[in-house]
Length: 90
Image 1 (spheres, rainbow, N blue to C red):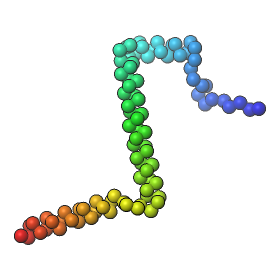
Image 2: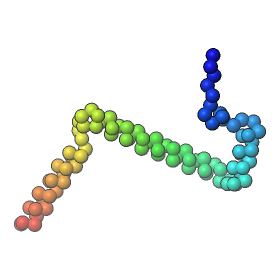
Image 3: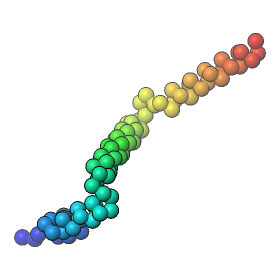
Image 4: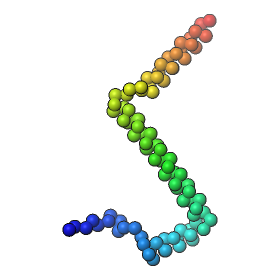
């Protein structure tokens, strides 16, 4: 049997984890660590939402662009141009 070798040596446990936590407390202070964790979680959530939106757009483009939003926007822009031309000529 072959065992998988972790790329970065695995997760820190025991004394290594305590040293990392101590350094974090010294750098950021005990009050800022929960705020830092909360903002990191929110940023990860926003990143995930953005990634999912891009994946959906790519799937729509691969499917042939049914209901393409760019065509709809172009039609709206053309309608707006004709309305302005009518107002300026009147």
